[in-house]
Length: 272
Image (cartoon, rainbow, N blue to C red; front, side, top):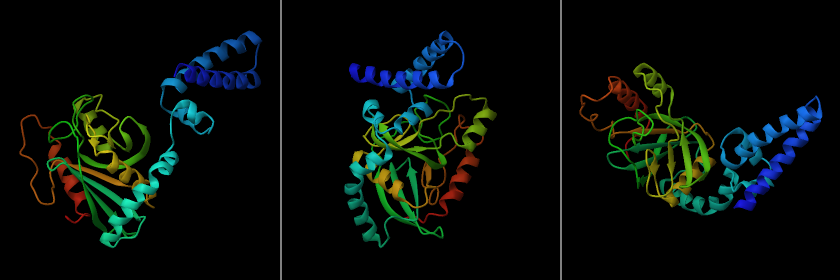
């Protein structure tokens, strides 16, 4: 590991100094100072960070093994065939074509299940499969702040596929969404939380743990779906059939509004 990190840093340093010597004007001393600072920043980002610098380095094929990271395409190559075999069997059983035009996922906290729906080009959704949720911390109710161990509740979208995670494969939600941010601002909450995933493994804090095999299915079908605007709705209970949980004195005043929004979104998805 130490030698790999040294190699990463060396490649980053050489690239940085080369660019600086070509593009930065001034005395040699000035260019060396700028180069030293740039190497420190870029090297640290390459080794420890996540974000645009590391993402840019990941676009260089020779850097991927050094960084110990994989792309979405890498993981699709690894898990795509076996996951698609399982998925096509599910689709055939329901009479659906693979890959789907549209996709949606509905999570119900009380039952600890994730329902997957496929949709036609005109937006008509039908139930495909129900996966058990193997791990989810917290209780019924929305996520309010970083570190409260709550799984969010709301109408979300798939933000990205996460090929590198300690939990096998993962789908990232766009939490906090506009509703979450607006009500955090009104409430005076500065840190509503982040990094909410649907992932593999069987344990989680604030996310939905589905097990490794299910995470492969979800990762691959989300990648293959033609319309990548994938809805992910997380509900306390199935609001198509049940009333929201009884209110408590600690509930935020806007919670009924959130549950109305979720109920409205669920109307597009007939109960299985």
